[in-house]
Structures are given as C-alpha cells and as structure tokens.
Image 1 (cartoon, rainbow, N blue to C red):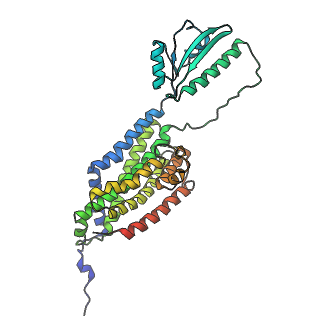
Image 2 (image 1 turned 90 degrees about the horizontal axis):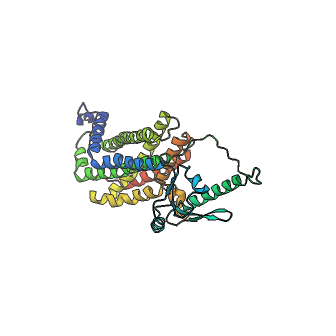
Image 3 (image 1 turned 180 degrees about the vertical axis):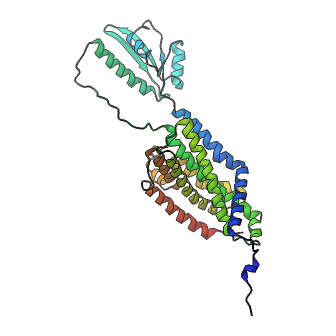
Amino acid sequence: MKKPDTMMNQPESYSYFHALRVYVITSLRAISRNPSSIVFGFIFPVIFIVIFGFIGNRTLNLTIGMIQNDSQENPMMEMLSHIDQIKLVRNLDDVALTEKLRKGEVDALMRVEKADSGYVAHIQTSDASPNGIVVLNMLRGLTAQANLLMMQVQHVPLAIAHTTIEGRRYKTIDFILPGQLGFVVLSSGIFGAAYLLIALKSRLVIKRMFATPAPKSVILVGEAIARMLFALAQVSIIVLIGKWVFGFTLINGWVTLLMMLLVCLIALMVFLGFGMIVSNIARHEQAVPPIANLIVMPQFLLAGTFFSIRVFPEWLQPVCHALPLTYVNDALRKIAFEGAGFADVGFELMVLGVWGVVVYAVAVKLFKWE
C-alpha cells in the first residue's frame, strides 16, 4: 500500500521563510504602534541623555557672598573679580547672606578686614554646599601666591611644576549614554517578550497557529528578529543624537557604532530569555510589571547605568558585578571611548554568554505554549 505523501498536508506554496517574514513585519508594526515601546525605547532615554548632557557641559561656577564692611577695596577682591568662574554677591545684607549660606545658595561668605600687617579674609562655609571646601582651598592658594608677589620672593623652597599630557576628556555623556543603551535593550527584551507571549497565549493566537503549516518556532524566531531590528533603530538614533548634539565619543566612528550595535544585539538575546521566563511565571498581563521589575529595577539601579559602581558600599559591589547589565554597560563604554575590540571585551561577552546559557536553560524548562 502506498504511503501518503506528507507534503500533501501542507499547501504547495508554503514557505517557512515567507511565514517568518510575514510574522516579523507584523510584529514590527505592533511594536511601533505600542506607546510603551516608544516611551521607554526612545523618549525616556533621550530625556535622560539631554538632561545629563547639559549637566556635563557645565563648568564649575562658585558663588561667594561678600559681607559689607569698610574694606571693600583690597587685593583679594581685585583678584576674585578677574576670575570668570566666580560670582561675587555684594548687594545683600549680612542676615540675608547667612541665610543663603545655610540653604546652600552661596558656596561661602567672605569678609575682608584691614589689619596692622595688611588684610585678613574671614571665610565662612556650610555643609549645605559641597563647593565650600573648593572655595576655601582656592582662596588659600590665591593668598599664598599674592603674599609671595607682594614680598617679592623670587626663589621658594617648595614649588609645583605642572604639565598637561594629551588625552581625551571623559564627558558625562560618555558615561551616561552607554548606560541608557543598556537600559533600552534590558527593558525591550524583558518587557517586550513577556507582554507579547502572554498576549499571544491569552488571545489564543498560538493555538490558532497550530492549525497552520507554520512551525511553532516561527513565533519565537520572528519575535527575536523583530526585536533586534527595532533595537538597532533605537540604539542608532540614541547614539547619533548623543554624537551630534552632545559630542558623545565614537572613537573609531562608524566602526565603533557597528560594534556597539552588535554588543546590544547579544545583550538583547540574553534579556529576551529573561522575558520568556517572566511570561511563563505570570498568569496574565497585569502580573508582568511586578515580576519583570524584580529583574529590571536592580539592574537599572545597580549596574552602573547612571553612576559608577564604585559609589556603592563595598559589600554591595559584588552584587553589582553579578548582574548581566553591568557587563553590557562596561563593554559599550570600553568600545566607544577606549576603542576596545571584541578581544578586549572578551570577558564581558563571556559573562553574557554564561548568563544566556543559564537563562535559556531555565526558559526552556518553564516554557509552555498555552
């Protein structure tokens, strides 16, 4: 008896790649129409970059309140009036200036008095302004320099010889922008995959696909490709805004950008695995945010997104170094600013690979189609 041809069970025109292409296009349309994808993927990172970009472009300016007395014309006032970074506040009385110092609205108060041997500058600072110690040290240096000039001292027993070597200035945007890229792929991978799979299951889309010739893998592969393409657009736009508006360092130009994109894609694959785990733990869409945030928020706060891990207590730093987003951020910063190659960030990529193996092993164990 002739065996039935298994190909008769599928339409002759069926193509796995055609089904995959259709799914990718459909998924991209759904992602682009999702407000949360636009807000968290573009708007929030750009807002953070703009804020920190402008903060990083500011120079340190000091404000000194001048307490009124009879000695307003003196060498100290003359020197300070020629320093652009110092603002002298002279039009307020003593009570108002003291109140501003307590609130940190001025960095220090100064009262210069005439003495038998010259002038004495009385300085007041407050814990409310961290720049108070900067003002004090600067005034000490100016006073010492002025005393030597007025005493006509030509040879001093101790002097400082200062030289400047060539180097690139590490701007605030050079630290912040890679952290925002890490946050973009983290949130896109976890929230995107979790919400999508929960929605497909609850709306019986996956069950309907079982009746089609398309294999189940089309869903996972197509979603991964769609997320990758969307992430490429996100990362490219954010990097170019940082480059053209705030001077973000791309040490090797387009080559650096392409390397950063590849690192982001590797990271996205790892975080998609986290999203699959969340989708199998959560029973419905409303349960996704609290579960996903247990993974997202610790990494967002502790993985060096906004500030260096070194600012945390020593007991907490090992936890920071165990998070996968830490290695994404480190790799992106090394590639962008130092010109590191993939061999130079091999350790970071290896850690991400280990995380990927562990995450997908758990995801496969928990994964259910229905």
